Image 1 (cartoon, one colour):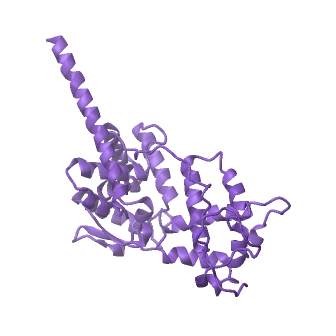
Image 2: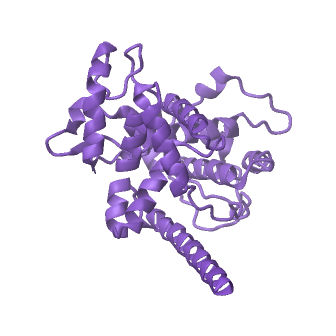
Image 3: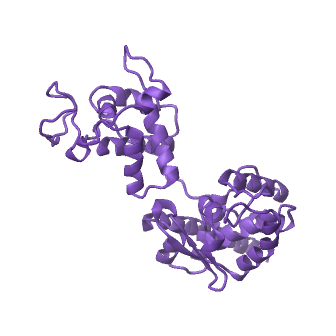
Length: 337
């Protein structure tokens, strides 16, 4: 481990001016010989990053660490996981070419995937006290508006869910449409988090590690009450609201399979229905009924109102479509008169 004084890099030159190699910042010097996975995971947990974000970052960084330079052997899984913090710094420091080679290997990926992978690597580089190379920039991608169901599709989904043989179908669709819960939050929702008298529930450790209040409508409370006897008959082994016939808690992939089944029964094209699409419908419905952005932001659990603001663009597109149809109808009426 290096013991000489740490000198932070203040310039932005993209080549090394000395042969000593990279140095850990003072906050990491005492952890230089510790396993990198546990140290880095603890850092992400301290920052409040969600479990899914942690998994995505670790996946991207593992691919980066495995990228071989000329003359190197590809790291085995055990070799990669046993690297120390200092060895990871030596391997990924921005001037040895590995970062460039890894980025070039992502050229066949979608812009959104590349941006996510680069965000993970950038986070690691910053944690290790290094600077991200200026020539490695994130790809530009067109802004995608959240997908929502049309009023007709939504009615078909509600009808199919209410008529489904799966008792979870109507409950899941209603809860997401009436609360805007993320699928992971719904699957993690415990009975002890629900206050039936207050018509609310507390989402514990939601995205970004934040707790928040969600509100229930009478329809949601009715579905939960109807579900309770079915849940008890499954002899649940957990406190989760949603349980499988085996008694174990429902997982997000199980919810998506349920969505696929409902979509098929509703005659909705494959891929149109997902828990996140229903969450978007919840948000746009609030906006159309006059809710302000700050309230919607709090109900959705968005860290930044900029994330919520995208629903304004959906509303604007809807308004333009309604106006266009109205104009066409007026024109037809004039011609027929």
